[in-house]
Image 1 (cartoon, rainbow, N blue to C red):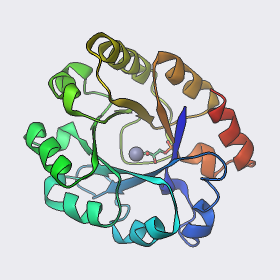
Image 2: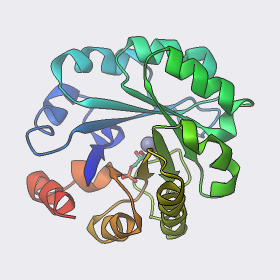
Image 3: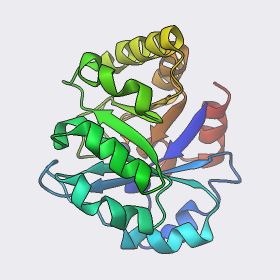
Length: 214
Ligand code: DX5
Ligand code: ZN
């Protein structure tokens, strides 16, 4: 199981120091939540916030765009050091075009679906994707409660992957803790995003070790 800690829950007064040991603790990915106040009712940050970090950290920068018109901004996020760009199905008109555009920019491509969006609505894109990000909360805020409906979606995506020999990774995002991460893993999940659970943990290393054991 891979862990992608979400910096949304990190200490922005001292961001580098708060994230610099995550790799040593076993996290290969860093999850970067971009919110624009339009697609979601919250504003986080833009590419300048992680551009410097990318030079200092040897991690896979997993950028989750919760923004309207991600096509317009994508190149800026790639230039700043994104390794993966995940956009929302609900935010674009032509997902095929968006996938191709991101591939041309040289990044891995992910698509995300909100809790009310079903797996069928992304089925035709599955052969072309590197990551499927299943939202287990309504996007917009950290610290919410995990929605069980995500488990079934992971299971369906895993079944489709096996049946069709697809190569995407399945990632889950929102309200993750040790118990629900275990359910996600058993359903076929490859990467868990965790914000609050990691950054607000009393013993961060132990918390990460627990997830890595899954
Ligand atoms: C929600 C974000 C999540 C969030 C996860 O809109 O996409 O990545 O930061 O935070 P926790 O783990 O606290 O739910
Ligand atoms: Zn996210």
